[in-house]
Image 1 (cartoon, rainbow, N blue to C red):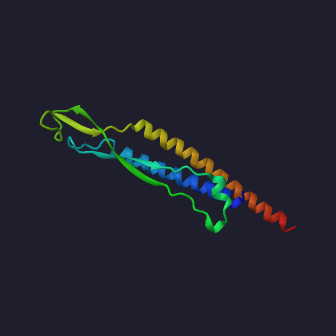
Image 2: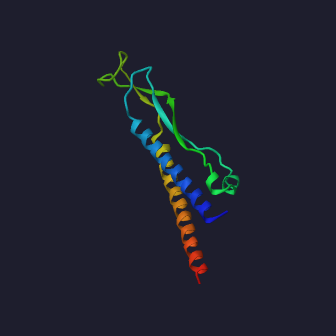
Image 3: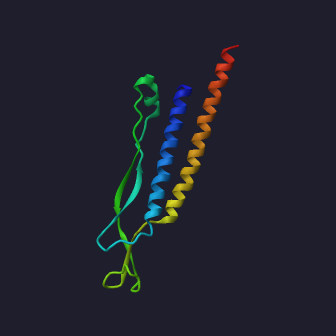
Length: 139
């Protein structure tokens, strides 16, 4: 595995973590939106494909085909609360919000941030090693 492969894998990891943070941010933004009964809001998640990195990095550089990461969404169930004075309440006095666990979303953000930082350290270390190899090779 070359230094370029290591940097590519770390960059892929940073992209994955950035997208997890983006999806969690959209979920947190939707957490307190009021919706009408029967409507729904999406719960965003990141589809992360499984990658056999040994196979992916053993091919020629021009043939590398890393999988794509995408943000998908599912309809999330709603939770109700009794608020008869709320202007958005239905005829029975109920308001409806998406059932999004903001605590879990914040945990996802923190863990993705730490994973991003770890991938960044690997990326920078690989770059430093490459520079040192070039420096030693020139002597």
